[in-house]
Image (cartoon, rainbow, N blue to C red):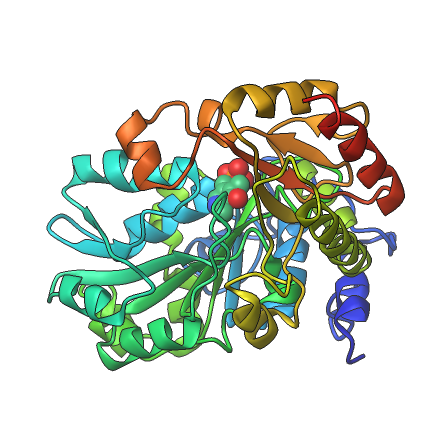
Length: 412
Ligand SMILES: *Cc1c(COP(=O)(O)O)cnc(C)c1O
């Protein structure tokens, strides 16, 4: 079994089917607690000497199966699922940083991530330093001995900027700083974080993985790295534990104490989505490129941003890092907020909603929704303009998507 789709459909076939009825579909083990044969076995589980399940806040068989398959997808050394993409980000940051530490990031971030970095972790004395990720010197100038990580989004949402990852990974490597990548928009199916030099990859499984927008979830994938020796909170464990144990323990304290476990039912829904991930992504990327090319021709649309377009300033990186498959998101600009609203309200099939990488095409006006908590200055800083729309292309026939966009554009 070499192909990624085969792996996502079957999981790890070297493992014995753990279900007593040999159920072909991983069952939903919707249970809080698990039984043991002996007191010694309970102790072994609590001490981490066995992999037995004991309590779903710590681990669960349905969630474990999703973790196994996501590790096959990302090629990571270890993987764990969380209750949401935001839970994955908070678990990672609170596991590697302490008071007085800082992380380097850009101002182009998912709205809640920006808020988490600039507001929530600030209360814990962790600083977020915003650097221009298209300028190596600026990144380097922000790094000091208290820098614990560089954090970036593979395609920024909603600006849809693509960075030259090799350059940023090189800076992180030379200085032994962890590189954390948020791969929610493309997933490891398109973008290989580990090969690109990331130490930690997080993504929201709510989007492309779940597919049908069925449930919220997140994942943390960790790649083998020597940089752990340079993280003060982790260096003793890294020096003293066998590698496998170290990776198992890495986020455990924060994960258990924050209580960010994924529900078994959500894990089951996401396993279902994962089996068709490849099919959906290929089709959506084909359609999105056609839709973006069509939008470029329309007089009402002042600009279109989609990395696979020849006209895109990120076209080279889309080729280098994504085999020219730039995902489901297209950024488009109309003249004003009023024009955006008129256009959105005239749409008949494309839905107005806040998810993306859904089976359904969907559109949102980021400035008045996801970024509504931010001041006008903050929105300017994040390049979330009043005329910007974010379109997520779905699985419908591309002709239907274009027809709907065309009739709605004609009404503004
Ligand atoms: C959606 C998203 C998140 C947050 O994921 P949730 O599952 O909604 O918590 C984080 N980063 C990016 C880039 C996202 O698109």
